[in-house]
Amino acid sequence: MVINRKGEAMLKKAENISQFWAYDLKFSKDSDLTLLDNVQFIYELSLAELELLALGTDFEITNGLREFKLKNKSQELKDKLIKRSSYFKSVEQVFTDYFYLIQKNKTRSVNQYLTHWIYPYKGKFHPQMIRALLNITGLKEGDMVFEPFSGSGTTALEAQLLGINFIGIDMSPLCVLQGKVKTKSVYVIEEIIKLKNTIISKLKPSLFNNEHDFYKVLKDIKNENVRDFFALARLLAVSDESRRGRDFEQSFIRNLYLMIDSVKDYKEIAEKLHLKLGNVDLKMGDSRKIELPDNFIDGIITSPPYSIALDYVENDAHSLEDMGYKLNEIREDFIGVRGKGKEKIDLYNADMEKSYNEMYRILKPNRYAVIVIGNATYQEQEVKTVEFTLDYMTKIGFKLEKNILKLIFGLYNVMKKENILIFRKAGENAG
Image (cartoon, rainbow, N blue to C red; front, side, top):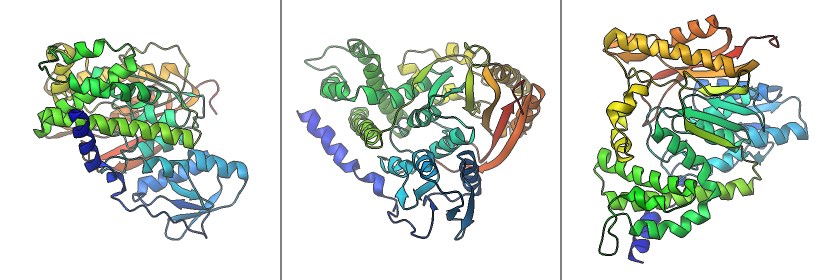
């Protein structure tokens, strides 16, 4: 019981933290569409306009680029914008689903709502941008989106929220674990809550607990999704201890309770908004050899690893080692971390060519592949990753539809600017 009180005391310190930014709960009575308060950058407005066009909206912008007038009003369009849009607070004086989703936030970062915040990961996607891109590329409920570099699971979660099915792979077992926990825990939250005190009591060896290996404790849990949840809670504490010098046990308890609360939020808001969640399939895999049939996927949204500039293996060494992996073995499979000097860049480009070929192969004709990428810096020299991607993607049969410049801000981002490259696969059905 002492442990439980400790955990609940820590949780109370963190509750209500999501309301630190002042969301204006009022909407304009003179506007058909009003942008969310946090929409501030040119690229966001560009994506908002593209999203409206993709959803079948005829509009004009009014009032200093913050409000929109609809020219083709209908109840069907209104319902669609409320359910799917990403950058709008309200539609004809009705709050959007996305406005309600982002209220469920236990962090100090506006874009880390629901389970997005779980585990610090450099180079995270902005969830709002991903939701918009899912709409812009015409993906609908029941379609299948693929990500060859699934990373922290942002696309997986946003696709799930829109009822879009998701398949994702990543070479990092830590990344795969993150994505699974963020999307699968909502189905097993009751069992997680029942086990939390037992798991906390076995966190460290004691008079009544002789087990030194926490992962052996988890093996007794039959449900894989429950095991994964507690494993990632441990890795969060490992990260906090390694990166911030925080007490391991206190960090584990605090994060565990916050994770539970975030998953409860997810389940509650999904039920309130009557969301039909998409299926999520995440596993370890190699983007250079994707185990999917030709012309199988309805869309691709991804960001290739910035491993020329950021050694992902070294960055997450503490967690990978805690999971039982040997760094010198696992890094051989990662794109961009092998070699030195020019050889490193040549190996990276060769691997990305194989990955882009595979993306073309599995994508259906006339469908879209979105690559979010920026030029990396290696040994104080700029590596023209964007230009390489543009040249090679068009060479193998993709047509560039849009190139949007995105400035980057945020704690876990490693690039100052990126390009959102929207390609369409040519083919017999291409127009």
